[in-house]
Image (cartoon, rainbow, N blue to C red; front, top):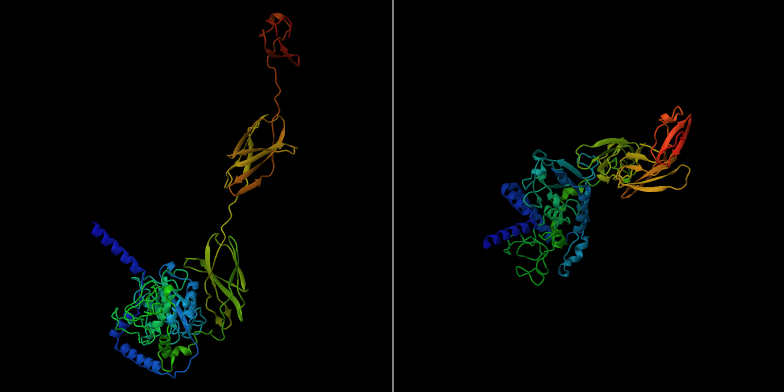
Length: 558
């Protein structure tokens, strides 16, 4: 039993650890394409010949920074897979840091390798126009019924539940979706079909916010895969640790196999001491937080793609990074100025040439948009649900056409403050000369009440704490006017007192004699009265009180 349990624990731990390892499908994808397409294999050979010729030429001129327009195709089934504009923008920012050697964690690169680290002079921008010339945010969103995707390229075709690519000679296509079997991403090396050209990334490993999960939440999956798209291989040469593979780069040390997690420097294999492997290179398998550099040799492989006749040279003439002209600009500087329980004030900068601004908004997670139009660069959204998160987008209407929708903005309406309600429906009942019953409706959030009363005209109140919503008030004066007020007491404060209510107690009732003890003044007919008693009787119309102290009433005595 012990041996079986130990084996189960080992297997479970192995599976858990494996789930935390980087899985890139680019090398396998490249191998499969070369086997299935002789044309692709020939194209790869020509690209490599051109690359080696460029790398071996010591007289290559210094080039300017290249800007690559990017379109991100978000393909999602669940709302959680529909990553935010902010998560997408965070990835673009990371790419611009990593490929320009501006990443703050470059300082973690061991000194032994810093002298070969490269600014690749490549930057990325979300596309500002579509292939047909309309303005764009550089993001498309496609809802699918496909549970998850793999390296079969289904995500790259609308017909198979994905999204068709934009022209590969004008844009870098990046598909973000749910990938199966722990796959983080894969890229198509230069030389393949335009319809499938680009990079695929897991929505859990894209950017550094939102749905991104550690240890792949620093955006390095896209950095790694785009470098494949730019013709850079894995740093260990994909040789399964034999020390015989190569990444065709001269300034990356030979190493036995890929690294996982965050290795300690130096990590020595294949006799590469004293400095060991360059495990912090973006093309190893280390965790995102432990990657920090490209080398000059890797940059040269990228550069070779952009020389005249190079496999990516057409991107240099792309207009994808520029707004169309004449442009109907996308509204910018969008702000949610004020939010209440049921309203939100939106504002944005005026767009030159715009005559109106369509607005669409919805509760976050809903499918359908509510659409309206503002003639000004501000609008109050009303009739909203309290304590609810909304998302919205804007566009501009110009005589030249419409802009694309802006990036998605969000806000959350306020939650209503709890109310300590005033007591209502106050009633007085069962009034007597000395008491009254007062009741009222149970007030919201009540933990009890304070009842106060006074005789009318008095300045002094008498306070009575009350638990329930009624009170039997006793000990009052007969035939007296009273006024009273009630306050609701809540855990977070009091309601204040109700308006003053009044009542009057009844007077003491007049006693009426109903028995004539001697109606004819004849002793013989007089009524016998008990000793030591009080008796009321009538003589004509006058009421008298007779107190008898003798043992027997005397004749003719009333």
